Image 1: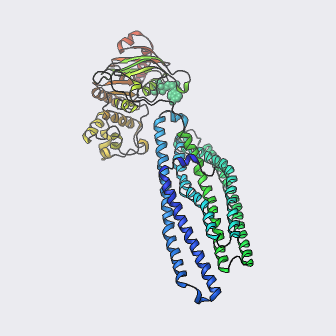
Image 2: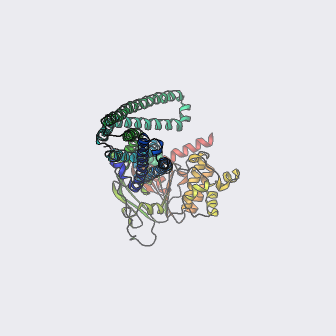
Image 3: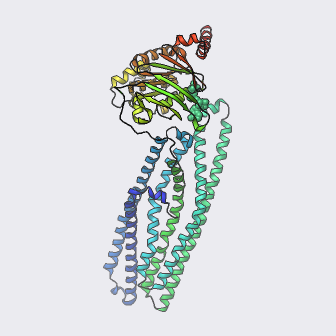
Length: 582
Ligand SMILES: Nc1ncnc2c1ncn2[C@@H]1O[C@H](COP(=O)(O)OP(=O)(O)OP(=O)(O)O)[C@@H](O)[C@H]1O
Ligand SMILES: [Mg+2]
């Protein structure tokens, strides 16, 4: 109960360091006992024969030895404690990251980003006290009363026994406090997380809040939530203070009881004066480690509550079975894609895609068009393995998607998503993600193709141009251009462009598409676009409506068909005419 088993299971490589931290503490304790005995012995000699009887060398030697041992052992304890906590921190962070990678898109539904950040950053950080301070102190504090008892029992079993009996009372109290503290800490950490995510969202959405004049209201809500957080913090501090007062009462009460029994033993002649003095010096040592344990316990509890959130994330069962690579059974490097009766729904709700049948032959360019929300991006995400169909199957080359590992699928298929993510860093760093071994000339070439050179030259920094946090120093169109350049550098067999140029002006868009057509001539390409002008030359166009393919064919065929595609084309023609008139 006083030790969290789950957390300890993460302490595999940590145990030797815990043992070393405990050992250094025990060495200091044994030195203290030796010192107390030396002082007691010296005092006794003084009372019996004056200064001449005192072995001054021994006394000075014992004092020096104690000082040196403390000076050496205390820093060692700190080093070992720090090692414990750093191992657990990195292990937990790695485990969480691995889990997030496995959960992929499911993670967005199960856990909010800021919740994960607060658990992984602050939560894991506060586990430092659990492993670095609490656990070594726990084992040490349990051992101390026994070590002291064994050392003192030879002098007189009565006070030694009293001190030994009282010390477990502190552990009992701790167990009582624990239940209450656990509930409070859990609530407190929950508050902390929701305050964190609310604050983060307020910062990220500040321009929108200002646009709608909502910043004052938001500020009031932040104040309210902060106040409620402050109240729970104060409650926890109050509880900690009260429990420490109670523990102090037992600690000093216990030491006083020990001293009283020592005095009685002295009175009755069971103990000499020097021995009584040794008892006095060591009486509080029985309890102080336990008292320190209680204060570490309160700090460590914050980490334990955070760890519950981390374990909740780690224990989230993955909805998807991770696919294992099976040997390729097809002929040559076949990059065709076949979808047979593919259906999909999010959260097992109403179907988003129904009975999709598509065939994209090697080297073909096909397009997906349809109204907003009809399921185009869902299909694109499924093709790169972010989700699996709930019915039907997809094959790449002559290989079923279940036989292709996600790693090799993503080497084969490259998606430029609707909201491509640009990382903090330089243009070069963002490009290298796609191909770490790319030469400068290759990077410059793709940047030229997408029309990023003006920006790069204008800044005078070229590939070393910093793009800011999440590409915030680039325009929406420039971010998209960088996303496309990154994909082109990947040089995969299959490309999927999902509204890849929706933020780019018309002239640049045409240039980019010409470059894309040229670069992907021999590749299998899927283009999703609202602007029909970008897909007119596709070998085949699939028109999606409410998750179903309602018509397909080339541009001329679909125009002649007079169906949904024709309507969409008509609407866009109308729009273009209006643009031209204005
Ligand atoms: N992560 C998600 N969880 C639940 N539902 C989702 C999720 N993503 C999309 N949807 C729903 O699936 C449907 C299809 O979305 P999708 O993004 O595939 O549409 P789209 O055709 O790409 O639209 P647009 O042209 O606006 O990009 C929408 O109704 C949307 O609400
Ligand atoms: Mg979309």
